[in-house]
Length: 170
Figure 1 (tube, rainbow, N blue to C red):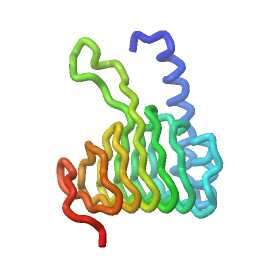
Figure 2 (cartoon, rainbow, N blue to C red):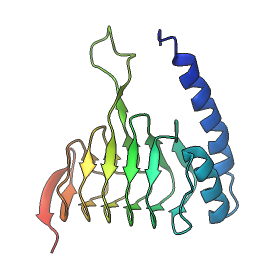
Figure 3 (tube, rainbow, N blue to C red):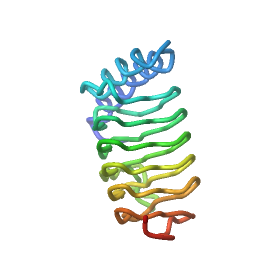
């Protein structure tokens, strides 16, 4: 918080908050896509669906592929970058965070950004939490309620807290 650029971060967050309010008041999916495009600074594909409410702190660090489905009440902390490839399904109340803080009290107010990548065709069940620096492999399935703190192999199913591989997809 002692960083001289901290004010710029605050201004960016405030703009995103304003746009989030509009997004979460959208009357239809087309309008929701429009505001999500404003938040991310990119055109959100017409075959992408986002149900509201949806929350993010910056938005400009989110990259969405085509045919992405984001269910209601999802929250993305995207300062470190969140890449969601084509054909990804995200269940309700999923939290994806690409930023963290050191444990030491002397530096705890420092942000540590780490990109999250969700590869093509992955499916995140309801109430999944994805932590910073994680890559979820192609077509992987993350069971409801899992906390993903390590990379996920493609074509596999992970469950639990912390998430562990329980089987390969058939």
